[in-house]
Image 1 (spheres, helix red, strand yellow):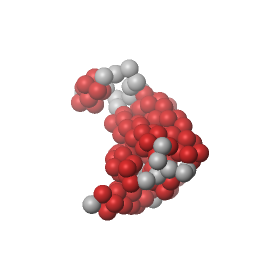
Image 2 (cartoon, rainbow, N blue to C red):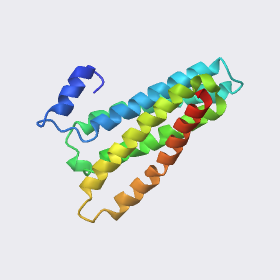
Image 3 (tube, rainbow, N blue to C red):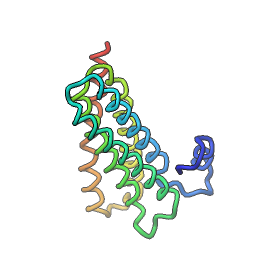
Image 4 (spheres, one colour):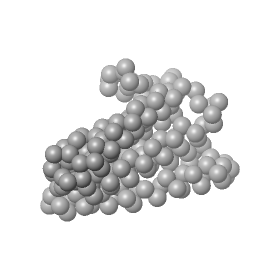
Length: 172
């Protein structure tokens, strides 16, 4: 996934002959992480929470790399680890990204809110897309443990909506 152009990635997603198992959601998560990195970097110069912003920027960078690795795994046959495992990993990462966006929001100023709103919206999209995939995989009524894990991650959707709403209010 890392070495693909955006066009190549989209071609893979469009092809019925290629397994993608969450690759689009992983890219959404990676974009969210990059936007959080940016917001934390900008907040370094405008806030008293320098240590928090440095830590958040570093964590967002690690999360972006994780999203890229999971995105690569999404394009590989995931039957060996269970079809729901890759989207569950993406959902967990997306939920963590939403939490990190909240941390940066709490320590930053209004200038970073648009980046954080976009990051939260991207992470929410990754989370919801992953949830849809998991729901399809366990649609036969089984997978209680999978559904439980997913429910924990989905609780972050409300946090993402709060970040987006706060940004709208602040700039509106």
